[in-house]
Image (cartoon, rainbow, N blue to C red; front, top):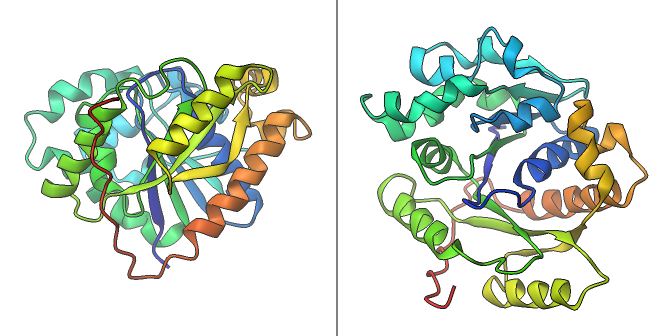
Length: 274
């Protein structure tokens, strides 16, 4: 079976995008799925979170995209069976400029992934907090949609209209099957009225896309990357771990009910009020 490819995108930083990608990947692997996490962020946060040292890499996604190195050579194993990584480091920071001179530059990642599509059930692309060429590559490579993490904080929807416009443009020009696969509410604090207000606002804006599972604000989730571990390894009984375990089950139920000839639905139009 060909891998289902999802990217995790939000041009705002600090919304738990990487946290969601790597921990969802860990729980999918724990459920017996073969998972590849692709780190397209020059900061290398997904790489660090999965136990690899960005400074010690021999090959990274940069070499795959810019030098044409086969992606199999850049694959890195993690401590979780069934969970592999294509790592990133600061070399990728210069890729935006170098990509601009290449032919079909928006499709480099999609082409690079083709040789490994049969090896995985899921490929999860962790995107940088921007809407540049690296993000466009991820959106173009996606086969089953974009997952948008949104934090339950003030101005949560601020700037999302720009992301929606980018998704629509990529759909029209580069990837006709691109859609929103889901919206994950993160950093929820049940002690505040604001948290619930944001939940209601996001659910109103994305009535069909929001996952029922809400990720709480949890100190263990913040600590785990500094130990190079997912929450499943670091604190499997924490509130954050239980939330991502539930999200993985919901994610699989939603993903695996799609037919093999899945065709994306229309992307919601950007709201002028956001």
